[in-house]
Image (cartoon, rainbow, N blue to C red; front, top):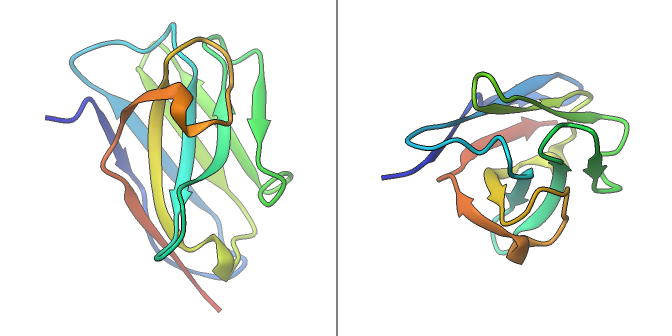
Amino acid sequence: QGQLVESGGGLVQAGASQRLSCAASRRTFRNNAMGWFRQAPGKERDFVAAISWNAGRTNYADSVKGRFTISRDNAKNTVYLQMNSLKPEDTAVYYCAAGRGSMDSAYVNDYVYWGQGTQVTVSS
């Protein structure tokens, strides 16, 4: 059973906002970096955003910089992705992941625990 569960996906219109949540269960990830990745049909899984263990550092893909914000609440063992000004090209399955280490890596291989993903669809 999964240790990370994403929620908050769905269908929205271009220009709208949406917030994704990722809740951890069965163990805590407060000492791990957390990241969001996304995968569109027929494409590789791409980095979206990451946050260090204490939220002191964040890292964003150029395509979402200024529109998306990653945050975390270690007391709730939850990480969030606030998405504003959504575009049709943001359509993808969004995955939450817990990092091998504590820093905000953009590399898929630096993440060891993955959620099952939540679909985000942005209509034009």
